[in-house]
Length: 141
Image (tube, rainbow, N blue to C red):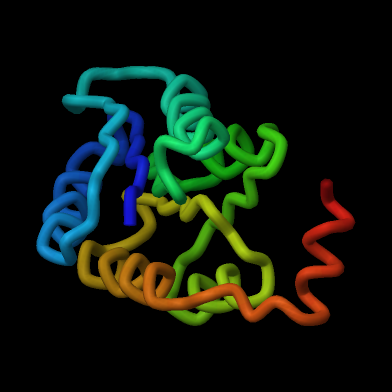
């Protein structure tokens, strides 16, 4: 799977952990930044990940900031992006199964590394269930 990854300075360290997990899983990674803990603006990186998905360069994305809230708000402004802020594996799984989320948002300052990696694994391992959920997703355009 080709996954676009983006973060702000608050998510940089966690992004490095997730990049390693994705590489070990054989995923192709489209890392759009940021590249250090120097202060940056999170909407810029949400825009880059969403553009990669919308243009077909990546099939899904992962965004990380301090809480995950800013990234989820910024990503959900984009048409056909369904960004889900998840704090544990159940919501990660259900965001894929019921909502067909194509962007996972994480908060580096509110999640430990082990939990964040568990969330990513659950999100990647879950497929969209379709059925009654497809009708609801279609209602959002």
